[in-house]
Image 1 (cartoon, rainbow, N blue to C red):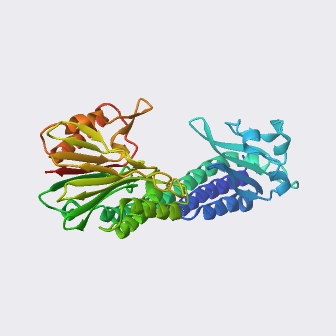
Image 2 (tube, rainbow, N blue to C red):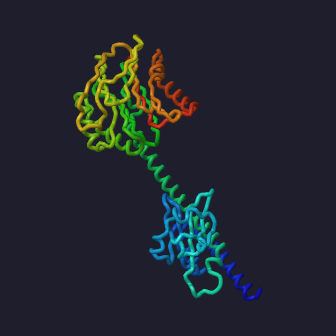
Image 3 (cartoon, one colour):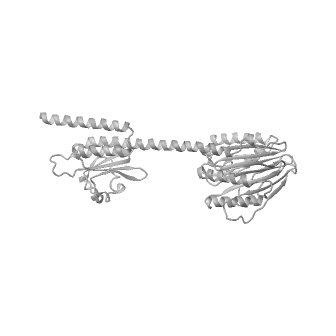
Length: 411
C-alpha cells in the first residue's frame, strides 16, 4: 500500500472519528431534532459526497424526517409499508425488484427486537466520480452514524414527552387541589344533634366527576346531594365544577325540589350540549318534622336502613338523569317520615361497579349487609372502605371509576 493511500485512509478515519465526536457533542448539547438532522445531512452531503438521502422514522405513522436531493416525484413513489418494511439488513437496491426505489442505492434499516423503527436510504448522483461509489465506500460509517442519529432523535422525543407529561401532571395536581376545595371537608359539614354526617371521596384519576354536598338551608332544614358525571377525567371534572356552582346558587329553602331539578337540567344541557349527563340524588330533610323528601335523577338508589324494623329500602323515586333530555317528561318526588333511628347511605357507582375477570359486576348486597347492624354509620363506612380496598387487591379486581360516599345517620 502506498504512502499516499495510507495517508488518505488515515485522514478519512480521523475525519470519521471527529464527525462522531462532533455529533456526540451536539447530542449532549440538547439540540433540537431538526438541528441533528441538519448535521447528519451536512456530513453525508458535503463531507462524504453522498448527496441523495431519505430518512424515514416510525412515529404514530411513518414520517419522512429528512430528504436531500430527492425530487418529490421520487418520494411520491415510495411507500414504507409496501417497499421497505420487509428489509431487516443493509440492502443494495440494484438487487431489489421495487421500481419505486431504483433512484437510490442502499437501504439501511434500524431494527430493534425484530421491529423496524427507521429506514435510511442513500444514493449518489455524481456520475463523474470514478471508482467505488461513496455510498458503498462509507457504508459502515453511515450505518453507525444513522443509528446514533436515530437513538438521539428518539431520546429527544422521549425527553420532551416526559417534560410534557410532567407539565400535565402538575396541572392535574393543581386541578385536583382546586376540585378538592369544592368537596366539603368533614369540618365544614352541618353539625346538630339530629343528624350525623359521614363522607368519603376517592377520585379514580387526579380529578374526577363525582360530587356531594350538604347545605344548611335553614336552622331546621338541610339539603344534600350526591352526583356523578358520565365519563371520567378533566372534562367530567370541569362539568361537575360548573354544576356545583349552579347547585349552590339554586338550592335554597324556598325552591321546590322539582323546580330545582328542572333548573339544574337546563344548566347541564346548556353546558354539556347533550354530550354528557349527570345522575344525582337530591334530598331535603326537616330536622323538626323528621321528614325527608328527595328526587333520584338516574342515580344509584341510596339505601335507607331502619335500626328498629331492620328493613332496608332503596330510594328510587325521581326522573331521568340531568342533561339527557331538554325537558324532563316525568318527575316523582319521594317522601319519607323518618321517626326512628335510621341510616342513609348514598354512593356513586364506583363503589358497586368493578371489573372482575373482564366482566363488569354490580351489586349492593355487600353494602346492605355492612349497614344492617347496631354500629354507627361512620363505623360502617370505614369498614366498607377498608374491605373494598382489600378485596380489590386480593381478588385482582380492577376499579375503574371514582368512589364517593355520603352517609346520614338520623338519631
